[in-house]
Amino acid sequence: ISSKSKQRVDTSNIDDLKIWKEIRNTTDSMQEDIDKLVSWATRNKMIFHPSKCKTIMSTLKHTTIDFTLSYAGEQIERVIRERDLGVHISSKLIFTHHQLYVLTKMAQ
Image 1 (cartoon, helix red, strand yellow):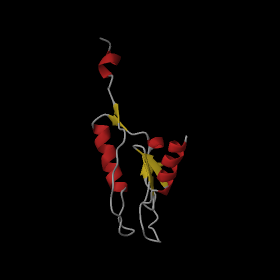
Image 2 (tube, one colour):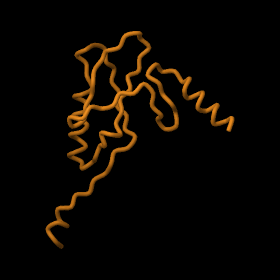
Image 3 (cartoon, one colour):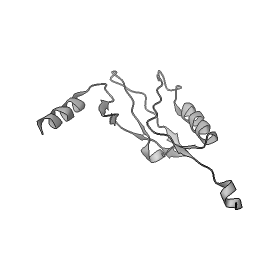
């Protein structure tokens, strides 16, 4: 066995992981949680793909706390709507887009 074969490291990709945290003020942040998660994944030879990561802030309030999250120095894209396991979720916690999607599919 060559030395390159011995050094080969098997890795696994992390799919469909969700993390949630209530943010009450500007001092709250998920960044520390993300950093801990990335550190855990690295120790366990698991891989995140930052280009596939998204953040969605859900609130019923009129004003929001603005912040950005990053992974390995790359900013995580913020979206207002995301499809997760077939369900369209909006940042306002309404399902209008999902209902329209389902009705359109039914009409086909």
